[in-house]
Length: 195
Length: 254
Image (tube, rainbow over all chains, first blue to last red; front, side, top):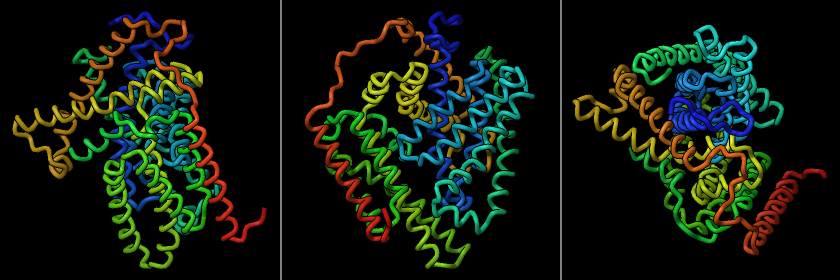
């Protein structure tokens, strides 16, 4: 199975890559299911501050995404993982205005790696990518809520400093998750699991 | 592992009922309509009627037990959050007005999603996506992700059992105080197992001709039948009625 022959249509992803992306998406979904609730409940309360779950799920997501990217080593991996996890979240009832910013954050991380012409090869592309995918969804989420005119924005308007605090806290947490993922990939390389 | 078993039940649909037999496209229509209405409706009574609608769906699909189990889980976290917010703001009227609607929406959205997942098998879902000409680049990982959830939960249980056999405490509190076993004992083994399983899965898929440029055929062709049209009409009628009632109650203008 070292060299997978079949490729999917005109995409560069092999069957092996897609299977691994599916498995990592599943891992993210299962861990996220509990972490989102923990984030909402332990941090600030559901709906009131919608970025709160990223404080708990962000580092774990960044860790898993780095493993997926290091194994597949193709630009587009994070965007694909984000889309699959987004669809899974929608299936179990996550609001669409939460899922779209989450997926956009992951697509933006991929675009960043593509722009700097890397392929998840070193910490200089992996760490900022983790930061972007965890931070960008927060302002996007608040923007979405304002755009839709949902009542949640009243709470956000009343306590804007907490929204800024959550955004600021998401960046180091995303980078921390990526760094842990990077360390884990090094161990997996030593074990011969990742090439 | 009770939580894991409940999550697993969402992805192992094997029952048959009137709702299970409906075309997945019709169920997607119900799911999307409920989601839009949950966000658009403002009147608490209309939101309650919408919630009762999801409960009727649950009754018809004979998934009340699973629905209630996950619903109780959501309700528990909502109650804890409400208490936390109450201690922070000390304004019951404000919280009741604002958070009541937010909780109602969240519970409807969660119910609709879970009921859709409980009544639609992953095979039907992927079949529907393929019928809608969604590229395999998305359908294959999605199928793997849905199918892998029960496997992952089983693998996780086995890893935790292995840790316990070695005398490592695996309780939530212990894992929070001593995170090293989580990393060494859980994260690394589950990643290595995931890589092994995905490699086996890819090999199996390739031997069955996956990735060939020819369009796949299916033994069971999906067709919209009379019951699907009836369900579609009922959902459309109720949605219009609820939207109108919400506007009338609010004194809205057209």
